[in-house]
Length: 264
Image (cartoon, rainbow, N blue to C red; front, side, top):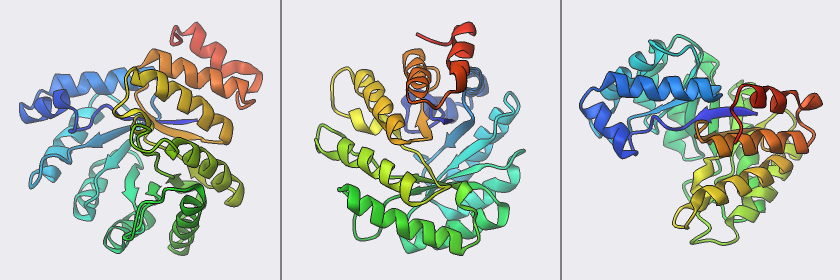
């Protein structure tokens, strides 16, 4: 299960303030904590700094790479920003993200192909974001075709079926779970991921909803997630769900996490 750590995102007030004040220690502490908590990739995002995104993201990348050897997930919808950031990273990154919108696909996919990066692909087109499982599967098929036509290996593709807040769409989680299962069966070798916390937006006790959705998604085949690995209850839920789903040989991942004191 590949974990993409989400905390260094300028949409969070504390991160935005740290970026504005160039509080290097604060950003680095976030990176260290996520690294130690089990992150495979550390997402870096400066998207709220309109007109300054490239400058701010460069500063974040430099700060994070001083304290962590984990590869980065470069998070921006702007192809120019992504193109400028890729040469700055020490290890092959993941790109977050492409969609079926022509400007975004045509701007970002060549970067992915050239640098052989992993890429998150959202089930979203110019016309609409898919609501039903069948709609998500249809968009996933188009994503797989366009990405593989560009000679990007399917193993580098992480499809996000997009889960919407349950508070506004009570069928969204079910549709996404069904889509995950269908995508994993229909396209061998492809991966699925999701921005986990979207599902609980607007509801009380959000972490309970997040944990419950994560369990359900893992059972359906989800093999990556964008989440906060420092949330010990969430991380423990992930490890337990993988064991129960038969995706943790001899439960060694669960046992190791227990011995390291990372379960709650």
